[in-house]
Image (tube, rainbow, N blue to C red; front, side, top):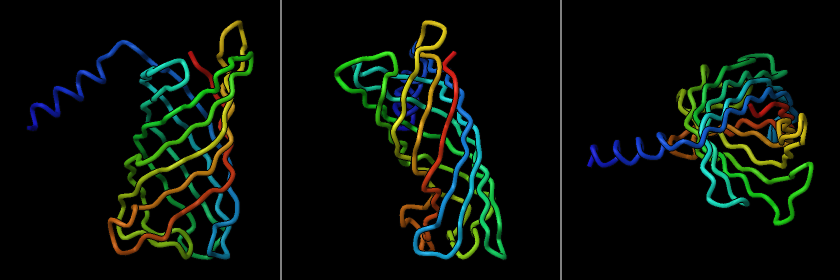
Length: 177
């Protein structure tokens, strides 16, 4: 069974569709169900793209995120994530190609299991992010990427302490190359 899993994973990852998308992110906002306010910045790199159709793309990528809060204690953590991202495009294509995206169940290592009054049971969490984006034609290709989203870290109730950590407004800006 392990060999089959390795073979399927290798077959998927060795396909020739490369994503090569680099994004810088920043944002924050009030933490739901708390008095604290969280901020974030980071970098995302999508290295693999699978095109199911011109309207559905799946990206695989890695992410570094720094999260801070205005609480008195446990003021920050770093997160490193691997993420799958589903992009859904409208039927009509345009110069500023809009799309909806969702990142879900991106396994993450968080450097601290507490941020302000928010607790995670351990250093394992999932990254989730949902938002709206556009690919802008620049240099005669859809090179420029702009995204607006909500970003969330939690352990999906796999462990007892699972206070979600949220950044309600995140902007990503980057390039396809």
